[in-house]
Image 1 (cartoon, rainbow, N blue to C red):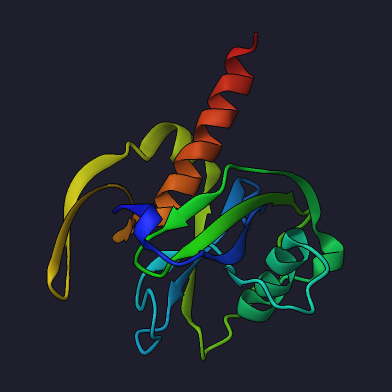
Image 2 (cartoon, rainbow, N blue to C red):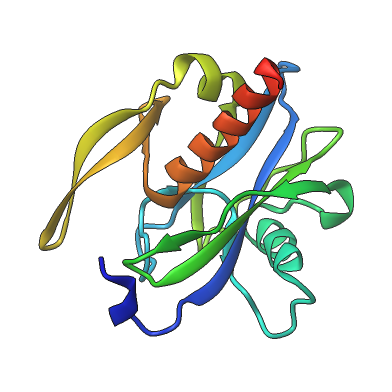
Length: 178
């Protein structure tokens, strides 16, 4: 895509939340977007969405969207940083991923108008099991070769895979050290 031919992108934010899962292993909640949505229907994503004029910041957008989509109480989240912005050509969003932590597993509840299910991805999957591969992805009138993660029968691709891969690279670099 030639970004210069697009109108200015709409701002959006997402939350990559890390918390101890039910088995004590660190996890990240992903959503399966409702099949009837206009954009990114049926895809796996991190909780997030468009910046609302009432949002105080892009970080506030990520927290609001996580609350609206999966019921994460913003008061239980500590934002520890942000990853690089990701441009999503098909919807023309400029997505800023925020990384947050919670001391306990949130009471996750999907907002059924937007989210059909929640998938809790073990963090270790990004570093050990989740070898990213290239796959052909087809949509109405298009075919794309993209990097994907596979987990529990789900294909994670697009901006979500890019965000997870960026985060995995940060973790790997931190483990190796200077």
